Image (cartoon, rainbow, N blue to C red):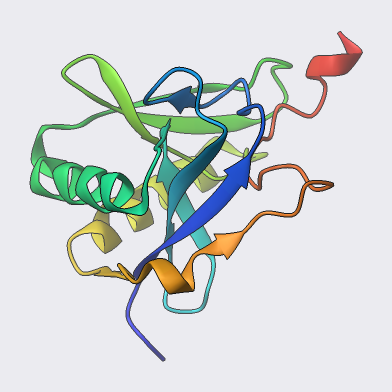
Length: 149
C-alpha cells in the first residue's frame, strides 16, 4: 500500500457555500484533498485556489504549521452529523470531508488526518488534477438537509 497523499480537484462555476474562495470572481478553482493509503478521503482544504501552485503552497503551509492548528468539532447545520474544522490564527484552513454520525468517529478521523499530514506525498503535477464534472456536487459538501430547512 502507498503512503497518504495530497491530490487536487479542479472545479468550475460557483463554489460550495461551505468553502472559501481565495480570490473573488474565480471561474475555475482548485481544492486539495488528503487521502489515506487506501484512498479514503481524510480531509480537505477549506479554501479554493485559482491555481494548482497556490493549492500546493497552502497544503505545505498547513503542514508546516500543523502543531499550531486548533481543531473545532461541531454539528452540521441540520444538527445530525459531527464534523471538524482546523483553525490557524482564527482562520479555517482544513475541514472534514464528510459528516460523522458518532462523535467518536469524528475524533478518530480527525486524529487520522493530523497523523497523515506530516507524511503525505504531495501530488504536485498539474496533469494529475481530477476534473470535477459539472453535474456532480463537490465531494464533502455534507450539509444534507440545508435545502430542506
